[in-house]
Amino acid sequence: MKKVSVIGAGLAGCEAAWQLARRGIEVDLYEMKPKKYTPAHHYEGFAELICSNSLKAARFDSAAGLLKAEMTRLHSLVIESARQCAIPAGGALAVDRTLFSDYITSHITGHELIHVIHREVTELPPGMVIVAAGPLMSDGLASAIQGLVKEEHLSFFDAAAPIVSADTVNMQIAFAASRYSNGEGDDYINCPMNKAEYEQFYDALIHAEQAPLKEIDQRDFKVYEGCMPVEVMAKRGPDTLRYGPLKPVGLTDPRTGHRPWAVVQLRKENAASTMYNLVGFQTNLKWGEQKRVFSMIPGLEQAEFLRYGVMHRNTFLNSPKLLDCHFRLKEQPNIFFAGQITGVEGYTESAASGIMAGLNAGRILEGKEPVTLPVESMIGALSHYISDETVVNFQPMGANMGVLPPLPERIRDKKLRYQTIAERGMKAFETALEGYGE
Image (cartoon, rainbow, N blue to C red; front, top):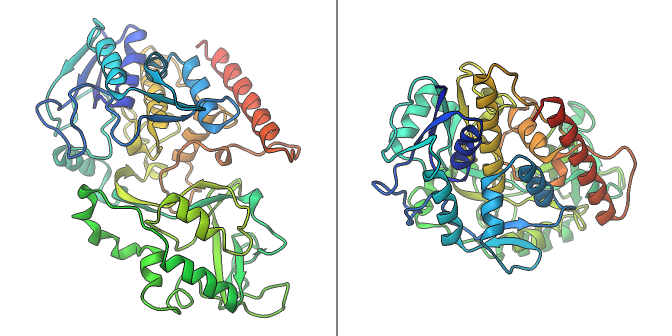
């Protein structure tokens, strides 16, 4: 009988195992709990939620809602469990964590084709393997993966700057230009500040409230010296940013014809130019504070933040160099990865990557071609993002409307625009699956 080894019984690992078992493929599911726990895990059950009980928005006309609709179509065990164990949370899908874990655990352990092996994995098993270890994987497994992909392709800490939607930047104020006119004209979007604007922004930044570091992050905070949080850098003096990431040299504000006092640069995050990150703005500020303070930057007053800056322990691959859009190692296609280690961020996103890894591993064992989903779908867009070699400075990404290609027509009403995008995505998703016979 065909068999696949799945490492990790988190959301991604359980989804991968479930997809395989549904296809009649035997699974060895390795999980080190309850013999060994990470610093953040405490419950014996599988798919343990440790940061929040919310799986984000449920409505279809949202990025999270579109993702859930696609996952439901692919027989997601996580979404099935979430709906069975849901608790009131307004427009979000929130769950009772214990019931949620128990539901998934019982389905996984109760399936005759899934064999749970409770031990730590320090070497990858032979044959087809799906590595679905979370961001707090054991040192032994991390060492094995380092040896597999080479150390420079594995990050242990996530220090990411915020990302904004390109179409929400006010280009009446901001302007596209590269420093000293080097490079393509739209490589960077520049948000110019005069002296008064900079001083107001600086004062708000140094007094903004930081997010508390978890104990498991505090002990290694020194690693962030190489990518200093912008608020920490600012506290070194009022001109530190002006001689650092906000330096205005080589740039001229077309509105004034002069060099600005300071400039915040936005850099392309993807080839489609739909997302831009704030250069040098790695930050540990609370998300609400990021929205408040960074919206003071001229040109970003109405900007939509697709992802806020984060600083925490998060083991992830340099996936665009290593993985294809099917979540396989390019150089060793019998090895798949799933979950946050691939660079998807969020509970449902991790589960979705597990679905795709399990689905495609199963199809390959059946002698079929793997499923490539269209970029108009949310899972397809995320699969493309983690394998897109044009992405600069790869950082984890959650579901958001900015990863999807823009509509051919401009729809000003945001709700209608998102509804149209979601309908387009689901139609493309269904058409693709039908073409693969799924």
